Image 1 (tube, helix red, strand yellow):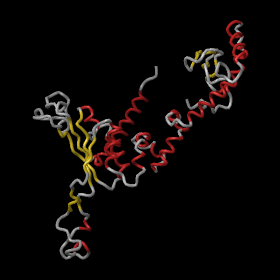
Image 2 (tube, helix red, strand yellow; image 1 turned 30 degrees about the horizontal axis):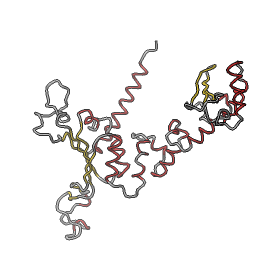
Image 3 (spheres, helix red, strand yellow; image 1 turned 180 degrees about the vertical axis):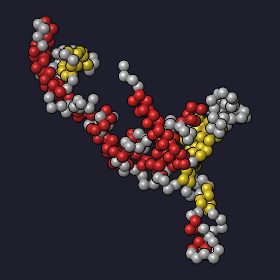
Length: 326
């Protein structure tokens, strides 16, 4: 709750919705927590150890005997409650010290998440900008060991995608492609400039072959539900593009190949909800090899995906405004 101070940082005990103390007991602690109760809307937790009483406490043992005897036989908790004033402050500070070395604890409070700030600084991307991206910020932070490298390797990208999306991922480098030339780089008869000089910049045609500027990501084999996640209308495609951009930027072309398990590539039938060209097949697979369901360049669908999401968000907001209040 952001309205409540973190444990160990409250200015007054009344600002905390709980209190910590120690149960006066002479036994060796069988567990950490002795009991818990709610009084006047406030949670009271008493421990066996980590306090001034008990066989392991710093106070003489007769102090524990006096506090226990008064509480058990006279229903007088004055001494125990007085000591709990110090117990509460000490235990909350002890918890505060423990959390300083536990990175996962800070995830409960976004404004006090120091570990995420440190990790984002190592990866060279501000945490405030990460929260505005389609991909969750901590998904990108989990890839920080690979992002801190100046040269990002394909194994790092493949393992990051496989870990986040929980699907098999393979990488293929140096995929052949044709790169279209700009009009000013085309060779023309009678024109001046380097594109028209034989042996220097002259090119026959409007494109050149290339194997250095493109790679291929193959995901699968997948079942039909996971397959739809990465199609041009899938829920995870925009996150996939965002994570790939984080690794390679936008200067290298790439394509995505989706493979389907042969038993999930069911033959198309009228009325079964399959989409032509997306998830429909004529007949069954003749062998046990994965079926290539789709091969495309996801970057071409990013703008359409963003527009569709914005449209759905506006429709949802409009529907919520139209709901009558009862």
